[in-house]
Length: 498
Image (cartoon, rainbow, N blue to C red; front, side, top):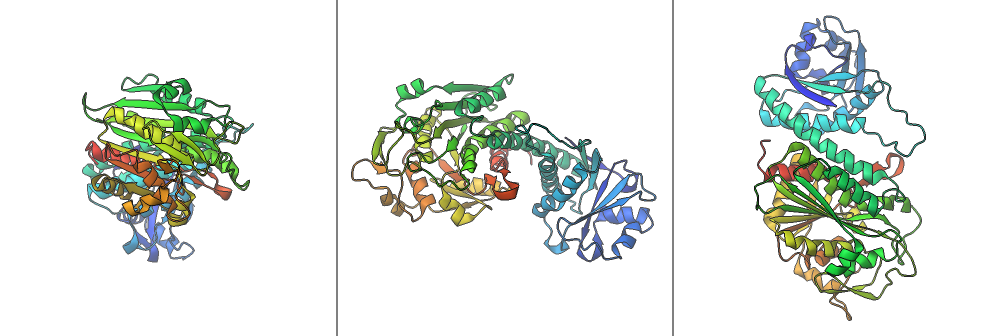
């Protein structure tokens, strides 16, 4: 999908549909008012009928507008003007883009609300492009018959007030398009079923991503190589599966040679039945999404490569299945991690931290400037934060603050939880250096406490995305989060102009 910003008179814009924002009490945006003046008060006459109340997400299509070169106009509800922000622009536009996908219109133009500074323009366009790309996303790879729109939207333009806004908007569109590319990749691999998206398949997708990209190198470690490295924790998880584990390593070298990289470590459990501590049958199919952390690392690296970001990034994805088998981990088993620390496995369904701890130890060899691990790690995070925010825990306040700022800037929210030493004793074991669970209380925190024992060599943050990585029920599907947060973080890290 193409996205371009323009300056001009709205009534002279040739488009299949002009999207015009309306606030409560029939308040038009500045560009909407200009259009109304040029069309002899047409929009105000429609609004005076009061069947359009401008609730967020409300739409109304108007055909064959007079004194206007566009084929259609669409009114878009923006809610109360004093409460409007860029964060609300995407949700306001999403239903409109979904409607247009079925309308036969192949292009449209959004009249940007009356925000005259570059930063506001940047944020509005970022939100709008994200909404357009989300509306266009389809996953039908596993259906016998695909039924895409006959005439999907291929271009979304934006009308702004000034030339500097055009520059800011086009920059935002470029960033948002790359994030959409990464988000789409993350969604695609996560939505695939476990019988297709195995650890080997995930490794192949990483290799495919690296193909033809000079700055991106991908290597995949086999179980034999991991065994030689002493990855006893990671390999203990894969013992219950017929699918061999993989350690996927992506090296994006966009920064200066020798500059320390940012490392992203993503949990890649392509299916998690819980092992011997088997999960309940209800919604177990959704455990194909236990690799969304790894998927988001792939997506973020894809966005980096598309933007040609001037930064070095390493992606590490430990990938396995967690299934019950005669050779699977048993409660009470003790394994030795790559770090040499021993772990008593009290619950085989707490396997994500077992594969992550070895990956985090492995990551030390890259001498990273910062490490962020991303994992659908605990149901406790869903209880604490629902499906609105990722849980954030860190051993470094500066890194945590950077991620929180990126979460606000991207709209892909995170919330920091404590990582106090007082929680560490919950992991005490009579028989090993630590247990892999810490009891019912503070489950998200004790999981991060476990990982913190493997991250003392570098600044580290942990994102628990269990609540945000996918939607259940009728809207079931991967969200692609936190690709927007991570990409925003990297944009800010390498000081790319926002």
